[in-house]
Length: 161
Image 1 (cartoon, rainbow, N blue to C red):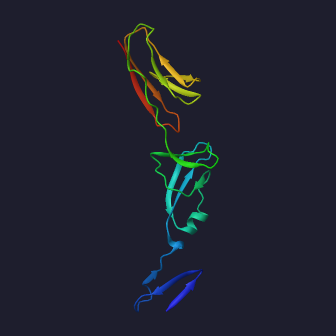
Image 2 (cartoon, one colour; image 1 turned 90 degrees about the horizontal axis):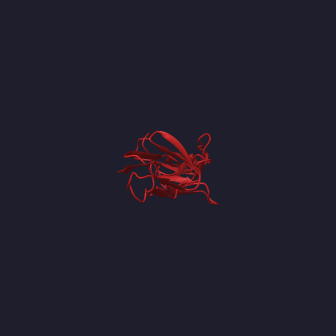
Image 3 (cartoon, rainbow, N blue to C red; image 1 turned 120 degrees about the horizontal axis):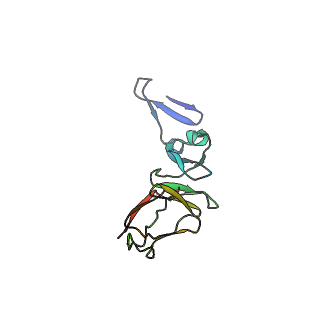
C-alpha cells in the first residue's frame, strides 16, 4: 500500500502499519544553514536542516546563509557584495617581542583593524592607524591584548631588557 501526502511517499513495511519507511530524495536531504548577525558577521547558530525547516526557521535578529560553517573558526564576511562564510583572520604578532629599555627601540605590530582598541597592562588605548609601536624606558614585561571581531583574540608579551 502506498499513500502520497503533500508529495512525500511512504510505504508500509510488512504487515505492521506503525513501521514506516520514508523514501529518500531531495526533500529529505539535509541543508547546512548558518544564522549570523547581519551587523557584525558573528555566527549565532549553525544547523543541518531539511528543506522545509531551512525555508521557515528564523532566528530573531539574524540573517541566514545556506552553506556549512564552523562557529569556532569562521565568520560571515558581510563586507562582500554577497555575504560568505570565511575563516576568521588572525593578527600575525609583533616584529619582535624583546626590546631594549631605552625608550627608543620599538616592537611593531602591523595590520590592525582601524580603529582598534588595544589593552596594554589593563589600560585601553585606541589605535587609529593600523599600526602599534611599543617602546619603554623601564625594564619589564608588557602584556598586549586585542579582542576585535572578526579577528581571533590576540595576546602577546613584549619584554623590555
